[in-house]
Image 1 (tube, rainbow, N blue to C red):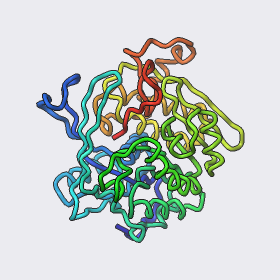
Image 2: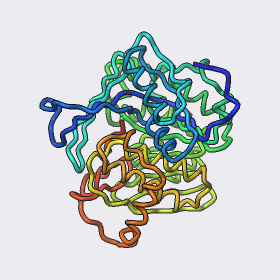
Image 3: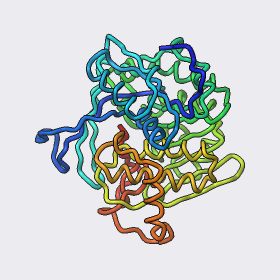
Length: 370
């Protein structure tokens, strides 16, 4: 995987899973009855990379695929989206992962992951990393899923450590209990949930947070990483763990961000007609990086990121739905009055923030990202 570093550095390098999303082209139809599907690039770090590229950023992905036609498709898709793929390499032993979803708007989007016996993106090895390029990137983005199993865990921690807390180093907490648990971790029996899975994961999250300057997660993810799920307590815990900026996604309450210097911002969600809530958190992540790179004030960055997530929630796909800057600004302009209103239109017509279900649903329950 390691290659000589390019002369030019990247605005953003993301690292972690990539795969193929297969979404039924009919809404409200279970997989057992679905007849037609759309094929899309998927995987949260890949989607974040696409989101930032759509906003004009120079972006690369570190990941692995199977040595198969779906892997070829992902390379083509990444290039088409403007994401550099030189660090996306094949693993002959494993197949490219597939993810199916069911689409039941506004708040039910079950995911079915096909990652057995092991996903190739968990076969990223520390010695394969181009650490010079990782150090040179203006932002490096890693995920909690990358910590779930070796050798990906060691590679993720090595990449984070190589940054030396220079620039912006983001840990997307990205908690997926399905990928933890069982003997052998994500590739074993799998699927433990609740306190046992959280206890197994927390030390690895702590090790990663020690190197991160930005931490991003919803209530469940913050609880896994820190033991705290109340927004302000979770933000304080993330700062205490090493982050300089804590971004806590609050579902129907919007987003809270707290910086170590005392700066804080809270912004409400953007209301849209939900088509597919998957991928909204990844659009938020790419737009968050865009705002940080632009040096915008924290509140402006969060509003922009919220609007990017809302646009993706109003569309079927994830990667192909990532908006341009003009689209995001257009939505913000169109919803300026709604931002200042205190009431919201209700759970059947609005999306309530990146990574969580629309309002009226249990805020402890996450809408998964692909």
